[in-house]
Figure 1 (cartoon, rainbow over the protein chains, first blue to last red):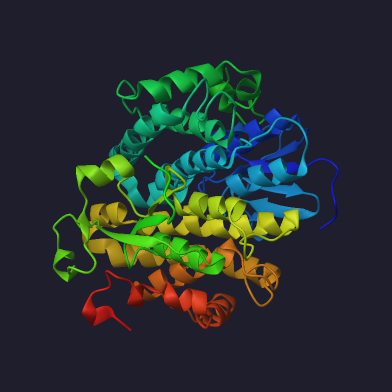
Figure 2 (cartoon, chains in turn purple, blue; figure 1 turned 180 degrees about the vertical axis):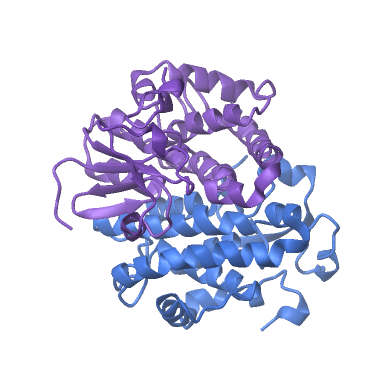
Length: 227
Length: 227
């Protein structure tokens, strides 16, 4: 693998983990190329691709790039990284610009804790391979685990949040929260019980970096889902 | 909450995420107190408690401490942290002693990637609340997702590993690997296809820090499971 000047994000418009990385790139002001990856094995999404944005199927080539066969994966500085939080923290530790973690160690820990509650405690249970295995009951299953996770997040955020998830600075926690709320809405989770989560999500969605990275305006967003 | 001199780990002997934190404490040479938490709602494990190591049930008191109702949770420096990787990285950033992440940014990223493959990609699918919901098919379910995860980890580790998961220095990746292999063995996963994982696990299990933190010798380990 050779060192590239522009990072390449292999992702999918609707993947919440891909969105996390897109937000981080936007907050850091990093230009990158996108290669859409089609994770749906029956190729159902394939028809949405067009000449301007070639979409790759889940090929052996992609499996070599990311053996977990998930998105995102990023080619950067000559290496390939998967796992969104590892990618985001690599950007934080190697790129200047806006901080993605607070300076204070306790606040950093809280930002990581909130990120991990989402990235390890909630999102993995709505991952494509899990949902496919659950089958017909996937809506109920997803609602159960998102609601359970939000019931934990709400009191934690009530303690840590200022304008954003941890105090008044944007952090990785915010980067994880917004795509998870998007997933919650897709799975029709009742958000009325979570006023802090709702308030933070609404505040964050007004920011340019969250807008340009939104699933509704990516190269592989199907026309009927475009904003 | 007041600042404490010794951190308090709320955990469970067999929880792989609790074991991660115990390894990190051992590698850093940090003394801590343990409070066993019984996550089994029917109290089946309760009989194993004894006067010397009081085990707390999943009470409202613990829910206030960790709204996710999972272990581990750590009281440290006046705050409560859940999520093992957030705890481990807090120790890394605030305590001297053995490094838990490499100095080189690319190797740090690889250590975090491997940790996250386990912590977000594999372990959450064997979490108690998930397994309980899956019911009778839990063995097959767990074997499926651990095998899938290990099929991804094996080629990645083949590239990154030296003596340990990332080069020749112990890192958070090793801290995550060993407890996940322990889980794999509990769920009778065939490990013969994963020679790198097996080799790393065997090397790490010989180290004192992995021995003293092992599920077989914790305050709440039932007598019949003690080493």
